[in-house]
Length: 242
Image (tube, rainbow, N blue to C red; front, side):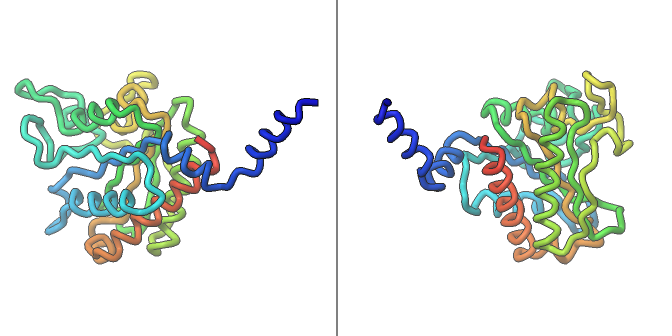
């Protein structure tokens, strides 16, 4: 009997949880994409709100290898501070020789080869004080992305009081005209597997810029939401042992 092998096996079995946690933190790369839209809602900057939420999440432990991609204030790109994630003119189009802010953000993200990609937005015109999770239709990680999105919005809902409206497919929104080249269905540009190399990709619509205004403009509210996102994200990563 190989006693050395048995001893090594027992040591690995009884390794403290922190050993695995540290290993996860080294391997997992998370990219945050806060909205860069400054033209949504009266006296309301979605970019400011979503960036504050993303920053709060990034500053909350456990800290993975985390990065933010954001076109706001970047010269040389069209729709760098506005535009829709579901409109061709605002995403894939080249205008006056310039790529879009969304295209810049996805290029920067792809350079990092992220494990997880989280896009943070606010909804508008819904008349609901709620949170929604969106995932991409039709790629091989759809099931895992649904689980991740569900965990994130559940945590946000419990921490903030926002109604949990569940996880939806990007193909169901009926918005604008950007389509996935694989399925031909309406899609979110940032979630398209032909655009985004991250296997796990979700888009969060957090609150309504009118109905949830007080929460979204509150520093306390933004921080609370960011912490809730990180808590659920860390739990999901640990469960999946990525």
